[in-house]
Image 1 (spheres, rainbow, N blue to C red):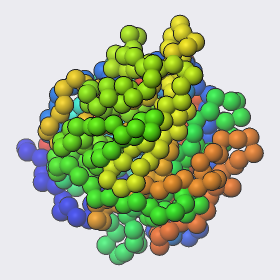
Image 2 (tube, rainbow, N blue to C red):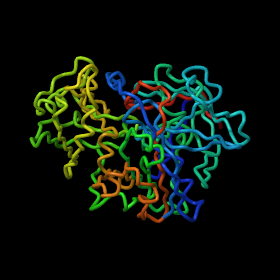
Image 3 (cartoon, rainbow, N blue to C red):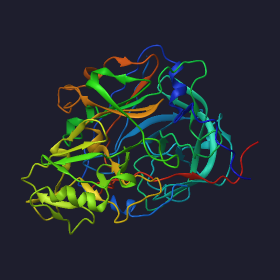
Image 4 (cartoon, one colour):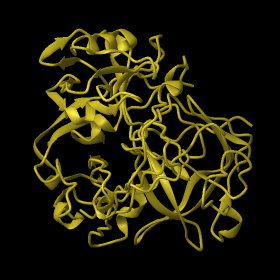
Length: 461
């Protein structure tokens, strides 16, 4: 049976998070933890080197990193089913689909410590079987189900998601599942898996999703410090200063709506010419660390850095003298957003104390023109701004970090010092946590997916 058509588009909420908003009367603040991670081995490029066609309440929960990176990936901690089973979800800004590894998993789940036991939940309902979510670099297979999902005191009833029983074995997932927060007009599924309509009774006045990402650190005391915050339903005014610079999203309906065009780049004080048009389409990712772009544009960026050379150890990357402070600012049509030079430096190249690896790299020698973003801005960019993703009208906003959010990784800083007022009638903030490495000494800076398709074998009537 062919997939059912998607639900009417304008009021889709691209995660189950909206359902939590009606439950609690007071903010719930749960600390974020920062964990020590191992050495860095960059493996982003193999995820990108493909030409693919796109087929005023708040609560906080933990987000962790579990891939051994000094930079790290973020995840949310949610619970599913009855009795509640707690899991980690990575945050995906390019997919509307969500999934969790199921206890029936036969491929790719051997490293997971905990799996979703659908048969052990008294509230689960199976919707379809033999479903596949296709990413640009991986596949996730399983069955669509609906079950209760809990976030702190909040409960979302009968939420759709994929109970995965087969994952691409070469993908070292950092969490047990992925929470999709994209709006995708071409999405398929039973009322869109893990997506909700905005509350018809007006419980959510704003559907804005706002992110603040704290800086990673390697000191042991980081295990008790804040890693970041995700606010749904508005913004946290204590985490940014000045006006939020909103820009209308660009790109096609085949891709994530969270896209902007790169309009300008300044390197070491000099404007760098970049390729306009479809080549300039960019996306934003919490699932990758670095910044990737078209080969010619990346080469032009590093040509402006004295002493930089193409890396012989990491394909697509560039090396530069460690004594050089690399200054890069990005514009998407509004103001320029500077990236901290510390974020541009991934550390010394193996076997060298004088050459360091840069955070901007080439993912593919071929420019994509099918609606897929050619630029991916990972957390090295996103932790330098306060970012807001607004679905009505579709736009992305950036703001300058406040003084207390721009440098919070110190021994004296605690989450309660950072939590501040939220702009919005109803919303909640989700804390993001750094966690201990399970695969010490290795890291995958994962690229986000280019597209997601769902091929259900059958849908429930």
